Image (cartoon, rainbow, N blue to C red):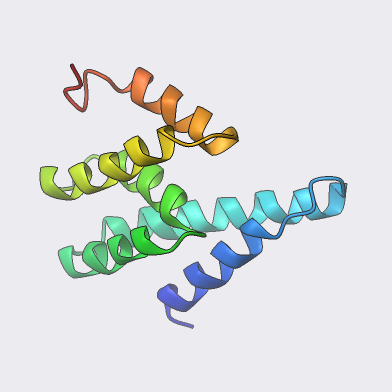
Length: 116
């Protein structure tokens, strides 16, 4: 299975988690771990793969996952990191847990991303 298809499947799975069910939360955590592993593997593979990975920034199920994980990769070009940071800034304007996580991420990474 190509990694793009698997990432899309994981994105859907992560958005359908029933947090009231311990089993579902366990499955969610396993899917999140797998997604981060794929992002790390693909994001470091080639510029072409990284560009394909960043195409998922438009997917509402995956944009946050991709933005946070790719922005923290060490070996990516500044323009690609800036795309991720832009998504994180957008998420920070929202409400809920993802917005709070984005606000914290921006605060914690202020120097690394040259925020004023």
